[in-house]
Amino acid sequence: MNHDAFHDLAHRLLSGELTPAEFAHIAVGTRSEAHAVRLDAHAATIDIDRQRRCGFPEVIFAEGKSAEALRAIAAAHLERGEELLATRMSPDKAAGLAADFPTAQYNPIGRTWRVSPTSDAPDRERVGHVAVITAGTSDLSVAEEARETVDWMGVRATMVHDVGVAGPHRLPERLAEFADADAIVVVAGMEGALPSVVGGYVPCPVIAVPTSVGYGASLGGIAALLGMLNSCAANVAVVNIDAGFKAGYLAGLIASRRNSNHGE
Image (tube, rainbow, N blue to C red; front, side, top):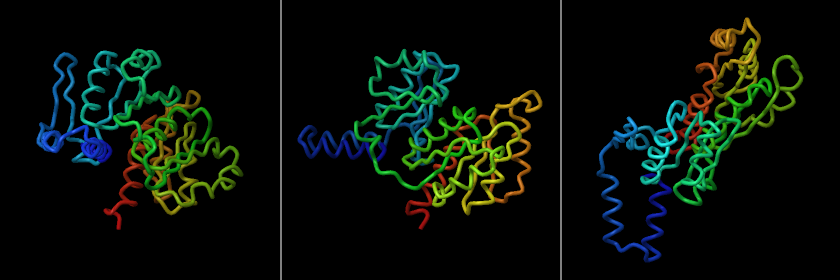
């Protein structure tokens, strides 16, 4: 049970909605439950212990899953008070789930789908700061996936768009917007040069995301990937092609731990 769910449970106790015995039964039962839930009808085994081990709940990769499977998996997570994030969700699947999850938030650009188990969870206080920077507007879908992931993790996100190296004056004009960032995600296609340039300006980790944007010799993002792997900026690390979620998650971990008791 996460902090928000436990807070909601305590509020129900104080308001008289739950008796002390009911409160204890739910709280103790949640802590002692199994680490996984099998949904045999949907070929899914849900890792309900992920938040305790790793700090954040399991994320649903929606691509390739049926709407029925997504519905069942989402319900199982929400029953345990977990803040839900699904990635690579198609518009038709999001529409098909709307009736069962009316409070869900769908981002059609980043193709992310989020549902909160409590009404006030999306408004919780943000911890740390991650900037997400794009080389061009064609990289926006990957950047939005990263931004939504950072926001889901409870970290403040700043977006800086269209500052690629073809217009070298644009990045220095925006430096003040991410000068205090704990980590930066840089999303770029074509030759993938922007992360190295950003890395030369900042004192924090830069997580580079190559995208599949570009003409024939870009090879679906391989050219950008190789360019980023060969970055001469010592603070640049690289994730897979179009892996906005992975970059956002890593940046969110850096920011959240730096601004928690673990980072003191």
